[in-house]
Image 1 (cartoon, one colour):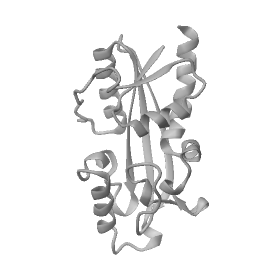
Image 2 (cartoon, one colour):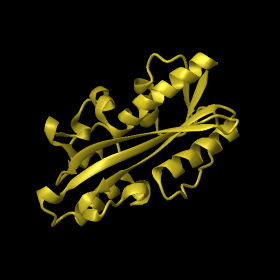
Image 3 (cartoon, rainbow, N blue to C red):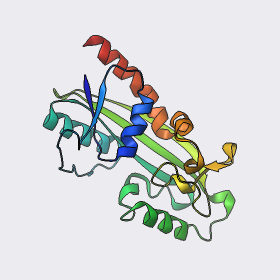
Image 4 (cartoon, rainbow, N blue to C red):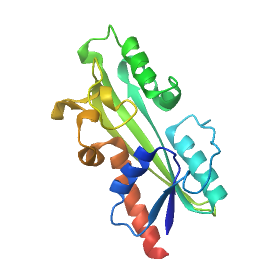
Length: 196
Protein backbone atom coordinates (compact mmCIF):
# COMPACT_ATOMS: atom_id res chain seq x y z
CA UNK A 1 0.00 0.00 0.00
CA UNK A 2 1.17 3.53 -0.79
CA UNK A 3 0.75 6.18 1.90
CA UNK A 4 0.84 9.77 0.71
CA UNK A 5 2.60 12.12 3.14
CA UNK A 6 1.09 15.52 2.36
CA UNK A 7 4.32 17.49 2.20
CA UNK A 8 7.08 18.51 -0.19
CA UNK A 9 9.56 18.72 2.71
CA UNK A 10 12.03 15.82 2.34
CA UNK A 11 13.05 16.18 6.01
CA UNK A 12 9.48 15.52 7.12
CA UNK A 13 9.18 12.49 4.81
CA UNK A 14 12.42 11.07 6.29
CA UNK A 15 11.08 11.67 9.79
CA UNK A 16 7.88 9.76 9.00
CA UNK A 17 9.88 6.98 7.32
CA UNK A 18 11.73 6.52 10.63
CA UNK A 19 8.55 6.76 12.70
CA UNK A 20 6.70 4.22 10.55
CA UNK A 21 9.65 1.87 9.93
CA UNK A 22 8.54 -1.75 9.63
CA UNK A 23 5.01 -0.98 8.42
CA UNK A 24 4.10 -2.62 5.12
CA UNK A 25 3.54 0.60 3.19
CA UNK A 26 5.54 2.77 0.83
CA UNK A 27 5.69 6.44 1.80
CA UNK A 28 5.40 8.92 -1.08
CA UNK A 29 5.43 12.72 -1.03
CA UNK A 30 3.33 15.21 -2.98
CA UNK A 31 6.31 15.67 -5.31
CA UNK A 32 6.54 11.90 -5.89
CA UNK A 33 2.92 11.76 -7.11
CA UNK A 34 3.10 15.00 -9.12
CA UNK A 35 0.84 17.15 -6.95
CA UNK A 36 1.91 20.79 -6.83
CA UNK A 37 -1.21 22.62 -5.65
CA UNK A 38 -1.26 23.99 -2.11
CA UNK A 39 -4.20 23.57 0.23
CA UNK A 40 -4.99 26.79 2.09
CA UNK A 41 -4.67 26.29 5.85
CA UNK A 42 -7.77 28.29 6.79
CA UNK A 43 -8.62 26.33 9.93
CA UNK A 44 -8.60 27.87 13.39
CA UNK A 45 -6.98 24.78 14.96
CA UNK A 46 -4.20 22.32 14.14
CA UNK A 47 -6.82 19.59 13.72
CA UNK A 48 -8.87 21.61 11.22
CA UNK A 49 -5.77 22.37 9.12
CA UNK A 50 -4.50 18.79 9.17
CA UNK A 51 -7.92 17.49 8.12
CA UNK A 52 -8.23 20.08 5.33
CA UNK A 53 -4.94 18.91 3.82
CA UNK A 54 -5.49 15.19 4.35
CA UNK A 55 -8.99 15.20 2.82
CA UNK A 56 -8.05 17.36 -0.17
CA UNK A 57 -4.93 15.37 -1.11
CA UNK A 58 -6.66 12.00 -0.54
CA UNK A 59 -9.48 13.03 -2.88
CA UNK A 60 -6.98 14.38 -5.44
CA UNK A 61 -4.60 11.40 -5.36
CA UNK A 62 -6.91 8.49 -4.58
CA UNK A 63 -4.38 7.41 -1.93
CA UNK A 64 -4.57 6.95 1.81
CA UNK A 65 -3.16 10.32 2.90
CA UNK A 66 -1.49 11.59 6.05
CA UNK A 67 -1.18 15.30 6.80
CA UNK A 68 -0.15 17.14 9.90
CA UNK A 69 -0.26 20.60 11.32
CA UNK A 70 1.94 21.70 14.14
CA UNK A 71 3.02 24.83 15.87
CA UNK A 72 4.99 26.41 18.66
CA UNK A 73 3.07 27.88 21.57
CA UNK A 74 5.01 30.30 23.77
CA UNK A 75 3.50 31.09 27.17
CA UNK A 76 4.92 34.64 27.35
CA UNK A 77 3.33 35.38 23.96
CA UNK A 78 -0.10 34.12 25.05
CA UNK A 79 0.35 30.95 23.01
CA UNK A 80 1.59 32.62 19.84
CA UNK A 81 2.60 31.89 17.14
CA UNK A 82 0.53 28.70 17.60
CA UNK A 83 -1.55 27.62 14.62
CA UNK A 84 0.07 30.46 12.61
CA UNK A 85 3.65 29.24 13.22
CA UNK A 86 4.34 28.50 9.54
CA UNK A 87 3.01 31.94 8.57
CA UNK A 88 4.74 33.82 11.42
CA UNK A 89 7.46 34.93 8.97
CA UNK A 90 8.51 33.89 5.44
CA UNK A 91 11.15 31.26 6.34
CA UNK A 92 12.67 29.42 9.30
CA UNK A 93 15.63 31.76 9.95
CA UNK A 94 13.32 34.80 9.83
CA UNK A 95 10.76 33.10 12.10
CA UNK A 96 13.48 32.33 14.65
CA UNK A 97 14.84 35.89 14.47
CA UNK A 98 11.34 37.35 14.95
CA UNK A 99 10.62 35.04 17.90
CA UNK A 100 13.88 35.89 19.66
CA UNK A 101 13.24 39.61 19.06
CA UNK A 102 9.80 39.33 20.65
CA UNK A 103 11.29 37.51 23.65
CA UNK A 104 14.37 39.73 23.99
CA UNK A 105 13.39 41.14 27.38
CA UNK A 106 11.57 38.04 28.67
CA UNK A 107 13.46 36.39 31.57
CA UNK A 108 14.41 32.70 31.52
CA UNK A 109 11.67 31.63 33.92
CA UNK A 110 8.97 32.99 31.57
CA UNK A 111 10.25 31.38 28.34
CA UNK A 112 8.24 28.15 28.67
CA UNK A 113 6.92 26.79 25.38
CA UNK A 114 5.44 23.70 23.82
CA UNK A 115 5.26 22.16 20.39
CA UNK A 116 1.86 20.78 19.40
CA UNK A 117 1.11 18.43 16.50
CA UNK A 118 -2.06 16.92 15.08
CA UNK A 119 -1.83 14.19 12.45
CA UNK A 120 -4.83 13.47 10.23
CA UNK A 121 -5.28 10.34 8.14
CA UNK A 122 -7.82 10.49 5.30
CA UNK A 123 -9.12 7.76 3.05
CA UNK A 124 -10.20 8.59 -0.52
CA UNK A 125 -13.79 7.75 0.53
CA UNK A 126 -13.76 10.63 3.04
CA UNK A 127 -13.19 8.74 6.32
CA UNK A 128 -10.68 10.36 8.68
CA UNK A 129 -8.87 9.76 11.97
CA UNK A 130 -6.68 12.16 13.95
CA UNK A 131 -4.05 11.86 16.69
CA UNK A 132 -2.34 14.53 18.78
CA UNK A 133 1.05 14.94 20.47
CA UNK A 134 2.96 17.61 22.36
CA UNK A 135 6.45 18.31 23.69
CA UNK A 136 7.31 20.82 26.41
CA UNK A 137 10.45 22.92 26.62
CA UNK A 138 11.80 26.46 26.79
CA UNK A 139 12.92 29.06 24.25
CA UNK A 140 16.71 29.50 24.19
CA UNK A 141 18.33 32.93 23.73
CA UNK A 142 20.06 31.92 20.49
CA UNK A 143 19.83 29.12 17.92
CA UNK A 144 21.96 26.01 18.49
CA UNK A 145 22.28 22.82 16.49
CA UNK A 146 21.97 21.77 12.86
CA UNK A 147 19.44 18.91 13.00
CA UNK A 148 15.71 19.29 12.55
CA UNK A 149 13.89 22.24 11.03
CA UNK A 150 11.57 25.10 11.94
CA UNK A 151 11.96 26.32 15.52
CA UNK A 152 14.07 23.29 16.58
CA UNK A 153 17.30 25.34 17.03
CA UNK A 154 15.71 27.50 19.76
CA UNK A 155 13.50 24.87 21.44
CA UNK A 156 15.52 23.95 24.55
CA UNK A 157 14.95 20.73 26.49
CA UNK A 158 16.53 21.11 29.95
CA UNK A 159 16.43 17.37 30.68
CA UNK A 160 18.86 16.82 27.78
CA UNK A 161 20.71 20.16 28.10
CA UNK A 162 20.18 20.60 24.36
CA UNK A 163 17.93 22.23 21.81
CA UNK A 164 15.82 19.96 19.62
CA UNK A 165 18.25 20.75 16.77
CA UNK A 166 21.22 19.46 18.79
CA UNK A 167 19.70 16.03 19.29
CA UNK A 168 20.36 13.20 16.84
CA UNK A 169 17.39 12.81 14.49
CA UNK A 170 16.85 9.21 15.60
CA UNK A 171 16.48 10.33 19.22
CA UNK A 172 14.35 13.38 18.39
CA UNK A 173 11.99 10.98 16.62
CA UNK A 174 11.25 9.33 19.97
CA UNK A 175 10.45 12.46 22.02
CA UNK A 176 9.07 15.14 19.68
CA UNK A 177 5.47 16.30 19.41
CA UNK A 178 5.28 14.67 15.97
CA UNK A 179 6.74 11.45 17.40
CA UNK A 180 4.03 11.32 20.10
CA UNK A 181 1.25 11.91 17.56
CA UNK A 182 2.86 9.49 15.07
CA UNK A 183 3.16 6.73 17.70
CA UNK A 184 -0.62 6.89 18.12
CA UNK A 185 -1.14 7.10 14.33
CA UNK A 186 1.07 4.06 13.81
CA UNK A 187 -1.52 2.01 15.71
CA UNK A 188 -4.22 3.32 13.36
CA UNK A 189 -2.09 2.43 10.32
CA UNK A 190 -1.34 -1.06 11.67
CA UNK A 191 -5.07 -1.65 12.07
CA UNK A 192 -5.77 -0.25 8.58
CA UNK A 193 -3.09 -2.38 6.96
CA UNK A 194 -4.31 -5.53 8.71
CA UNK A 195 -7.85 -4.88 7.42
CA UNK A 196 -6.78 -4.37 3.79
